Image (cartoon, rainbow, N blue to C red):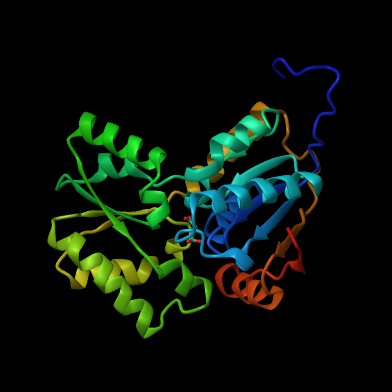
Length: 281
Ligand code: DGL
């Protein structure tokens, strides 16, 4: 343990890790946490009552992120995962300033791995309008473009997270929207596509098929769920917060929307049936 003040109550390693997103998108991160950290207790919060974040004001996304973080910590969480690119871009710095003693992991579009993988030198970035217009994203993009010479094409995907949120994963509307979003990127020689929103990995298959249909020979798709779970494992070890109990861990969930909708999403996307409660945050 490093320089922890002695007069502070340290979090209990057996406490849950709080994971949140605007809705069901964070389940694409949660599935990697479940795989990599099977002994950790997890509490997932879907802010579906306020989704989608991507088309809301930065102020609202910040307010929601701060309120949810406080709720999860009040519920006894020992660490937080902001399983949402939009909330990370808007609020991660504020969250870390507010809770310096808590390990907090965020999610950002995987531009660095994309810059390494691209052969054409052009990368398409699919994300919400709010993520793409954030200072955090622009700084990362401009700095990487300057140092690697890679061209990053930003593609705001208005409406896509909302369709996935409402269980329209493979509806004709979703497929048509993905075609409109992906085809222009392929036409501009993008051979690597970054999924910069945690809802999109659930549409990865359609995104890949659309890219190939649009003329791409070998498209690479970057999803950051796995490295995020790895970073969480690293931080827990660093803070000596790994759960010492080896018995089966618990997974519980809550939502500011409809529990039945979240329950259906858990079942369909993760084949899990956690206990779900509705909360007012
Ligand atoms: N899943 C979120 C993200 O990673 C937000 C989608 C939304 O609510 O617009 O950006």
